[in-house]
Image 1 (cartoon, rainbow, N blue to C red):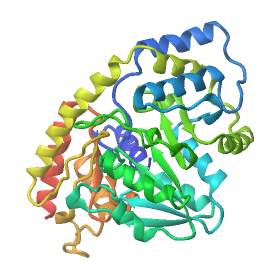
Image 2: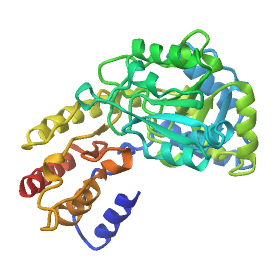
Image 3: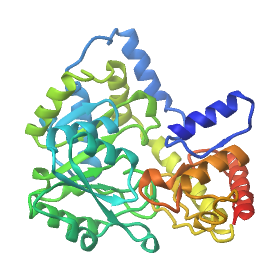
Length: 380
């Protein structure tokens, strides 16, 4: 958000900025979804709904998840929230008490750390291996589990790295956590954007419902970031606790957005495949272009729409003589001098990487990557 704000400020001043910071699709919301919102307005569907969302939308979420992954959730196990971030916040508030430990793989989405801290919990970080694509494994996880571990978070595909946990490994992680009564939160925000494997939900395993917590969102899948609709698929008692919290914080999600979300889930799905094909093409271009920059390493993402290159070649040299000390300074200098916006790795728990979103046009990718190339060469 800070990067985007500074990029916007420069644009207002007339600067030609290439923005790789935004974590949202550059595609418009599909027309059928927008028309459903118009119909909702015309039918005056503008009143309060139930705090945890309409039954209609809950049913649509459960039906879609069942069709996609073979799960068996019902409306009493579903809650609608103001975006995917909101369901994660609600889960932490409902389940994490002061001193509880929440295990988070590194690199991680920035919100995880803050919502755990806000709940009074303790973040326990598990460093993943860049050479292995930043993928969490059960073997990496196990040494970090203690009697205080309340929850493990897995985001697959991952923001920021694009890492994907394969089904077999995910099952090992589930067996490890479920045997100890530890909640396993699966953040499925990017679940439809995989390049070389089929979408899978750990919630489809037998016995998963007791400890698996599904956090989902329509924002990325249907290019609906501004509509703010997320959902949780969790045990009924947790739904009740989260709903009590939501009723006194935001109350219900936007009624019109809920109607649009029903259409997104039950209507035509062609837009998802179109976006995925375009992201795939962009990913291949961006990875090849980054790897052509001397000294830059770039793991190939297997999902989502981000790359997480290692730009350590330009960091830590000539400190005090106009050198770059860290990725925050790298990002600030890149924006100020080359007019390219990226997100520094410190936000995600690493110190040599930046996140680049390729949810933008090929023309912008080409322009921005050339600027990054020249900036790194100049500062290496």
